[in-house]
Image (cartoon, each protein chain N blue to C red):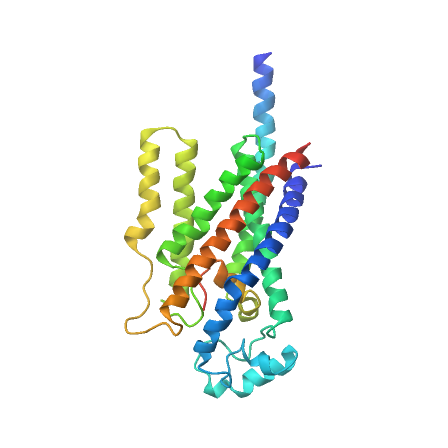
Length: 249
Length: 58
């Protein structure tokens, strides 16, 4: 099997397993909190949030019609005309698909990087890569922009996306230097790279706005989302290390 | 003997580098789409996954 095909094959397999597992974990952990927060966001079941509009109807055609008819009352900045999956099975199915796709994407990244690093792989080696992924894609960005429930005030989306991506890139570069350059200057530069995004600071939400959901609920969401992500990355890394070695032969 | 080993390992590492880099690139492309695509339908479909993965949302 060519190397690229074996990397893709490993990543798809790992992504399917890790994406399924994390969907189950989210179904029990984060999704109930998101749904509960949306009730605060819409301020009651009769107002038209595009996600909740489907609750009273069946099928997303009716849901989008319902969302469109209540568009006037909706000050949420989603485009109410836009398609959204209906609550219940359809919404969970799309969450599942998004999780599997994301997991395949992350698996392609760490399998490719493990390949480039050239060390032989096993599940423990993969687990360390997975934990680095957790630090790069969850802990470091989440330190400045913690996982948010719907209805949490926030800075403009684009600024946050830029800071998020910059933080993940700087942290990844820092960890790469720490692991692969055994020189004092590299370690010093690594610390600077990891600290820099937080010294610059994440974009802050506009003053005077408050989260709609209770603070205890937001805090719970941060903890649950972070732990779910730890589980996801540990699984993704360990499985990648394990399968990559098996398919290499 | 050792020279041949070094040459062959160098050429094999070069031929292994490109597919591995391609894999990283495709992976980032996929994550970029599921986590950052501004398309409203893509956002709504991946909404709960985005929140749970702490991608900036809304």
